[in-house]
Length: 345
Image 1 (cartoon, one colour):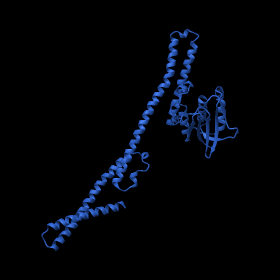
Image 2 (tube, rainbow, N blue to C red; image 1 turned 90 degrees about the vertical axis):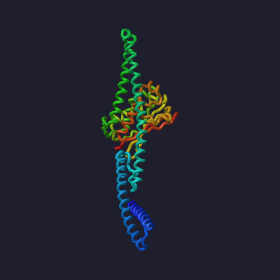
Image 3 (cartoon, rainbow, N blue to C red; image 1 turned 60 degrees about the horizontal axis):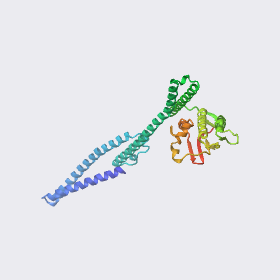
Image 4 (cartoon, one colour; image 1 turned 120 degrees about the vertical axis):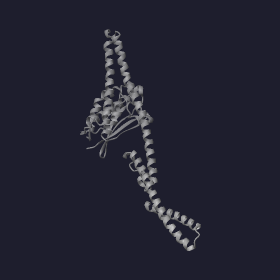
């Protein structure tokens, strides 16, 4: 349809040029009318054919260049950037070129914005890593210097300072181990090894292991009263990490004498697991960044509790490694609910 319209336009333009030339020839001719008409007819025919051929070849040359430009712009855009190119929806070469250039410019704009965000994230991440490691390093340095300055011979402090230095070393090791785990999960080096197991039994085991910590803060860990089994297909060790992290967080940062509840829901082909508490809750502005590395809602309190700030980032990577999702809902003064899904078997 587009090609037919183009041919019609070329014919009309050629006819217009031929008529104009014929009219000019007749105006300046001194012969008889019959001779003038014959001459004008020949001039019209020659002019029409010449103009049509000239315009046609000009069209081929110009639009061949345009097609080349369209192809060049397309090559700059990856397949992921253009799932359906706007240029492919039209047969008009100029429109194609315009659409491709606009789409390419939009891609570059989005890429620049993404790179700016990544740069901000990189700076924050490096700053956080530096800060997290600097604290235990300075602690160790202080303890060692005190011991070297004579504290080593003082039996009232030498063992105490060595024990404190060991705690700081353990904290550094924990941070490094967590960073290594995240890196391996992101690059795929840490493989998920799924198996069939009872998620309810695993949750009970986690609650029993964390019961002493919960009791120390007066927090009750509760599970559904019924003892029904719910089998999932996942990496048992990694999912245990997820549950431990969520339960420990709820105990650390929950309200004293509160409650942490683990609930299970049958969601068709999946099992949904919730870890909910009735603690202080999290402000809405913190929720989008909660799973970022080293992000802390209350930095001072988090460090007092001994967290590395990497736990939720690891949780997110583990769940995504299972091709599942994790979400968080929270209301200040009411509590927080973490929920994730696993494949049901």
